[in-house]
Amino acid sequence: MTAPLVDIRQLRCHFKSGANLLAAVDGINLQITAGEVLGLVGESGSGKSTLGRMIAGLQSRSAGKIYIDGKDMPHSYRRHDYREMATQVQMVFQDSYASLNPRMTILASLQEPLWSLGIHGQAARDKAAYWLDRVGLPQSAGERYPHELSGGQRQRIGIARAFITEPKLVICDEPVSALDVSVQAQIINLLQELQREHNTAMLFIAHDLAVVRFLATRTAVMYLGEIVEIGPTAAVFEAPRHPYTVRLLAAHLDGNPKGRILNKSLPAQTIANRAPLATDRGCRFAPRCHMAELACCDTPPWLQPSRVRTEAACHRLVDIEILRSRA
Ligand SMILES: Nc1ncnc2c1ncn2[C@@H]1O[C@H](COP(=O)(O)OP(=O)(O)OP(=O)(O)O)[C@@H](O)[C@H]1O
Ligand code: SF4
Ligand SMILES: [Mg+2]
Image 1: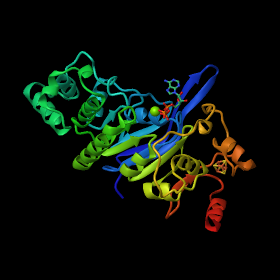
Image 2 (image 1 turned 180 degrees about the vertical axis):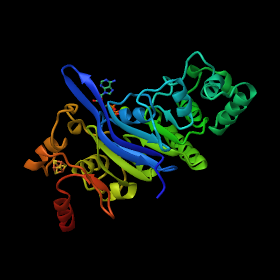
Image 3 (image 1 turned 120 degrees about the vertical axis):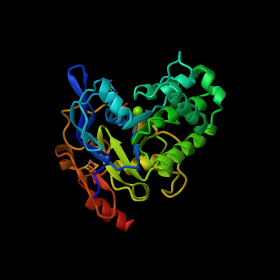
Image 4 (image 1 turned 120 degrees about the horizontal axis):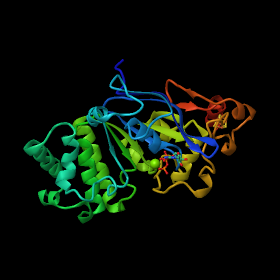
């Protein structure tokens, strides 16, 4: 079996919140294979961005290990670590405006990641010109500043900046949710084309389940800092096992799980009312779970593999299977 490109072990990110420790990411184990697209879904505050930012080295971790291409990544990065990181992991952000320097022309912004790799002058300009064209923008756009471009055009630049260093992994954090619906599909198609062209692994974080279902080969579901279900995208969407995944999908599906997925966020009543604390015990979904029993409040469930299905972290998977078979 080939080693995964990204191997995450017991990763934690705890933030201090008054007297408490808030567990934004709490003991995650995850592997991403070279060239695969892993979708990451879960409601607001579940820790998706924090996890993505830790993998990209933009957020320090409280504990755990991150191996990229077999290398044990440091807890905090020095200058030369960032240089190496540029060829390993890049990020596409939701807010393309904030990710570009407003005082730099687009051409300079495109070259910036190359400068840190020691690529300067004509070589950098040529690469930037190639990528302007590759993401569908005219060369004249290179002379403009970020505020002179539309949101969709700026996101194309964000994508070009992510791919220009030929990283092995691109993390996309809600890359289309701030864009007009009319340009969302174009940007998704562009990401898919580039991912396939360069065989780049992608961690795709999104609220829009339809997009994840379209793009991702595997999908992971996060709930309050933990992965509660993970598996092939078709299995997660068509035969979810964890009660939270079922609820999440139901909130997005139009009655029939195989039917059209509505592009809307979770209704307000399904949003968790408080962030998890590092001292919490048992299953974090228990206060909202219709299947909860006493053991759920005491013992944390762990991801249980299945040969044919997804891995799910729930004590009552056997009961769920029985109920499903009777339905
Ligand atoms: N710098 C920080 N300081 C304190 N708490 C933070 C910080 N960053 C994130 N958090 C908290 O960590 C939790 C996870 O946040 P995160 O942004 O990772 O969630 P998310 O799943 O990306 O949400 P969304 O879907 O809204 O983007 C939240 O409770 C958030 O308030
Ligand atoms: S472990 Fe218990 S509370 Fe948690 S999802 Fe499963 S049944 Fe529900
Ligand atoms: Mg986020």
